[in-house]
View: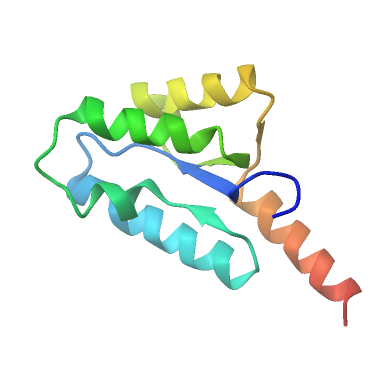
Length: 116
């Protein structure tokens, strides 16, 4: 990408304490956004391949990748997750805008309608 970002969107949401670490919600969101043309960093994709490492390892990877994204998309329940809440605060401090799934979907649909 020409603006120096590796990804368009960073997915953030609850994992710890959620059945299956909430991977289904993360993977479904990533699939939807990618189908609409976004490049997405999905923590479930790196975290899922190493389920035995300490939580701190995952969080360090996530925070490092968050800074490489244009926007953060918080999934349902993020406000009940200390990790997702901190990711959202870090994004805010770094000037990374928070966007809802519905906003990202609407923007992609508008962009795609203009190119037809």
